[in-house]
Length: 129
Image (tube, rainbow, N blue to C red):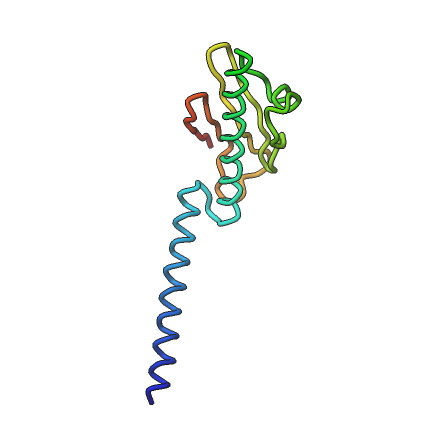
């Protein structure tokens, strides 16, 4: 009889654990701005790329005294990030006083992802639908 109770306890604990895990997975997807886990992973990767590009732009400004377009950052070996991460492509808007790295989604909105993500010279993120 004690084996039956032990087995039932194990099943109940596993069920509770799976419920908690599924709730956390849904919550983390929502905080990333996506409605499914794959879209959340993509958004997280795009944000990481944006931070990398912005850091390279800041480093380039520190060494050269000016901001540069994406192609110049890549050709000067200041940056080793692809120009796009489907369905997003990257661009840099810059002036003498600052820059903004923009990731623009192409195609249909799958998974509740934003149309544009951007980060500026102060490393502040913004999104647009």
